[in-house]
Length: 565
Image (cartoon, rainbow, N blue to C red; front, side, top):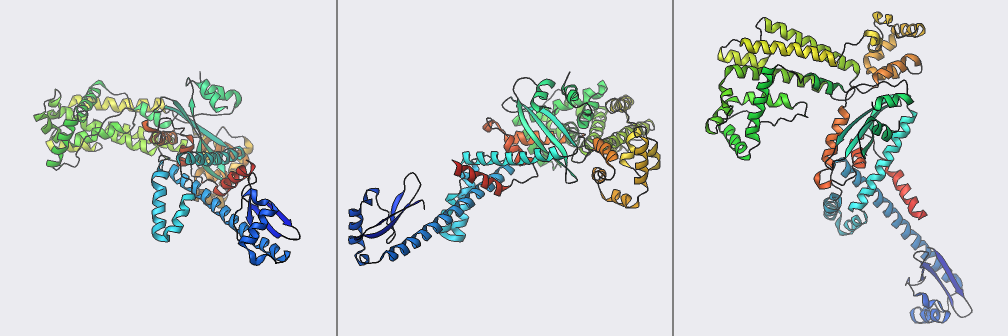
């Protein structure tokens, strides 16, 4: 209801009101509710309308028309209020559907082409046609969803940035990769403290326009290489290289004899897997022989677990591969009949399975430098133990090799034994090169109740006294058993700020790029060759973030913007 005009003379007592927008108001008869043309506002035309349409009201007093005007105004206000409520609900529904689409990492067109029609069908069946028509009020077009997803991503980003600025400590982890459109993508995750608990989230996902040097990364993040430039503006910063990648690099070297076995194994797999006909025939062969598997796995160098998995599968299907090579000649077919070659293959399957297990233990959330240190020290000691077992001709630690020797009543070949021993020694050396032994100066962090940690050299006298207080506090000891290590020290931030700050600096840092690798996998799923122009950051943030956008606030901001316009 935007405007009211009233004509009141001795002959015509007639009220009307104008509805519509402010640019083009329409006159409305307060008696019948008809919308009149603007040209009918002349008194003569109004008199004609009254005489022809409402002759019974010709002699009504002015109060009658005033009452009708109030009733009509109330009806219009109620109608517009209901329409406004429906629009607000439709806007929120649009945001919520967009959020579900982003969480499922689906194409934006799915809302209009599938979700909307499905909702309408369900509502039509359950609530009939009238309710189903209201579903059309919800905007679900491709462009609308893109804007909604951008709004929600900005909302979450604002929350994260605000929380990080207010966090007493935070750590970042960045990594770079190339997407399907050949763009160099930089991912940056942040770990911070929010209300006494550690949280981690995607800070941004941006393309590097030209080069991927430390200077380019530094300029993009605003904070040779990135570390040295960062230290110029933050001298106390510390950094770590991804433990999972160091582990992968440490396992690359091996004696030439084992390397040749590995290369030949990959060639066998490629001969079968890279040819569709061979792959189909091998699949049928495995089914006919009742094998536990019906296909081989393809080796991919960039996938850390690939090597161990393909070797185990190849060794388990060695009988089926031999049968296949009898009808499909291959120049390496004789290797599958060579017991010495199979001994090396069995060992490689065993050792890389063990390395895969360690790799998986380094993945996941809440991995600290202490967790990595424990896993590495455990692996080095196991390698030394396996070497000593092999010297005593005990092969039980390598299950595939041990079973193969027992099944064929064989002794381990001397040349193979020498290669295995050399490999185990080499792994011990490379693991220590990539993971140098860490001093015990930070042991007080992992166990402040151990009296032997008081001798650490990195704490001042006052800090050691505070550490002694902690170690003698029974309530804190009980909390230590119930809380994670980082949360325990964060709970002491107010009572023991100096110790808590030093502990947080060690525990809060990222030990691996697990989150980045996981995000790149999600990114590759979002940005495919069919969506290669997608700006994936908003979708990726909603997909990865545990935070839920504030839908009510988003709707209020959108409505306020529309009112301003």
